[in-house]
Length: 217
Image (spheres, rainbow, N blue to C red):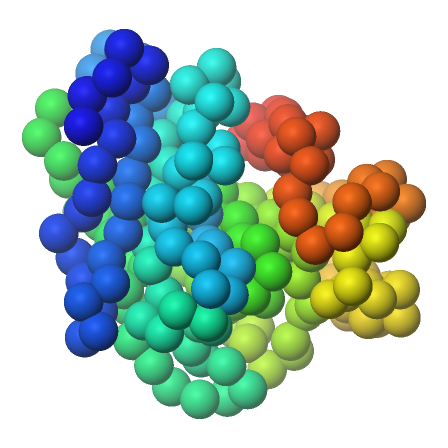
């Protein structure tokens, strides 16, 4: 769906339940390569939700969005060690976006960011996919069994002071686990008090994580 502020649409790739992915391309995306953010939604959400949440920033900062749907609306697999279609689906969606005719995407500046359930799943993709240069976990606990340490991206971790789904103890425990990976090129942990919100993304948090990513790329 072309707009004066860029181009938005659906990708053809899909999982067995028929859910697919949304994408957004910023203005003048044909002129020079633009960075790519793979955005993973929370439980109960869709990729289009993530496009809408970050579209204004993507337009202003000129980056593309690839936002897959999870196979099951409420969570991403693998979950607690279970196998599933989601990892291959995310990679397939990214590959399809990179191959769109006339689109110039900068695969050297590739962020994987997830919110809530998507944030817990995001490390599985980021730590196992060599092309990923940055990982952002937003309002999500880290699950040790999801990590496949074949890749070491820049990492951002943040939550909300009043986030009822990510309490103080769980947040600090996840942050401590991330600090164990000393080979990370950089690790940015924002204390929960930095963002006073409950379980939602504030505009300031979104702006700051995008600025961090583009500066570290």
